[in-house]
Length: 510
Ligand code: CA
Image (cartoon, rainbow, N blue to C red; front, side):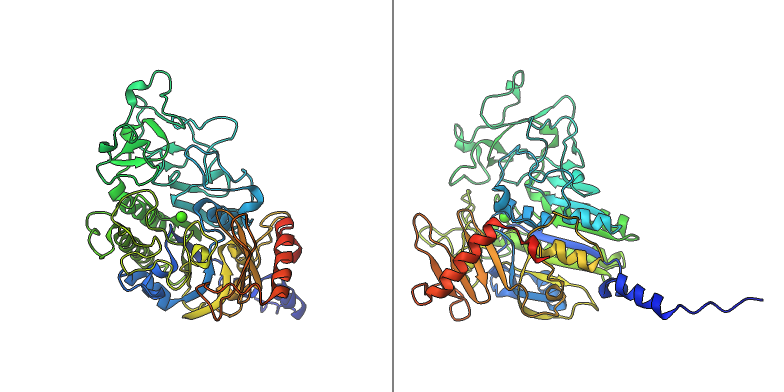
């Protein structure tokens, strides 16, 4: 005779409830797709006020999830923001700046990253798109003809398909896991910092944009970006050989979308984390011809339309795989907008301010953009969609990508190893739309300086060329009135807090 199952004791149930976080109990393993735009400003998306760039797919994402109006990347340039988002550590602590071509991996192998976190929780992990965190070791130049390592696979990713640096830098090839895609043995690839060819490879030269500017047929450079000319576009750094493996700039979005489609289809049955880092709308902007002319804003606006198409295609892939409901989709950017960033691509009107592009302001009402310490540098589109778990709406909470690490750790019931993610704070409630305040304070990083946010206050310390500044973002969201003289106590307190945070990571908060 079968005995009825023994009822679980109440003590055991209590223990279960303590051990498994609430969110994990509800849904242990949502897939996570993080779509990262490049140089996409707060005002470049329709849902954030753009009127001259149609972005129906990103707008749809925003209408179905939380649209954050005070969401930030950690810095106003590429490499530092990406570094901080993956490691949960402020980039300035390790002097992380924009990397040159052939730079070694700037995240030490074995570092516990956002990818390691998902892996520890049983996920498959992948990065598709722009990397710009360096590849290879410090002690020897990267050999692109051999196994290119360490890279993403050494810091928590199971699969990678990369644009190795950025599209304005060499090498202009794709890297799949440890190998350059399509590279033939008879056509070896070298990257150098100087125009001197590696011994024996003098014949593999590309046009030098400095000596032969007429070779830059796609568009000329405006500053720099004129070393190796590939596909009619000047690049930073020198590439030799590897012609068999060259990418086509105008099909890059299609290539990445196809990679994402295949990855989603192959992994629909198991939880996965996909970090999809688009090259758009970073320079050189070279949207596919089918997107060219879609906006009155030239290639920058058209590249944004292409990125919106990419978002739509990724959503379609999730729908087709039947997993759109059980997937958290995040859309954000690595820094604010820039117009002329090295190429005469028709974006900047002669004589106009660099911050205004034909009546379109990529940072919306916010001041500044890429490289700068003002809000436009780090306040970016920030959307999180998770049907059934995150309600739709707009959140004013102060949130930052650097906090994905600690927040997803909470969601997944994981504990960060001691000493890792030392600047990452758990803001899961804000990300889920359940906390309208978010961070009490936050560092913003730029090319030259740091700033501190505390509620509606924004403090920028004095630099060699500028006096300190204090702005009240509630009454002055565009940072026009420096009121540091009226609030000396606030200035003193924020200055002291920033100095303290510079010296000590936030580990003590945990
Ligand atoms: Ca960027």
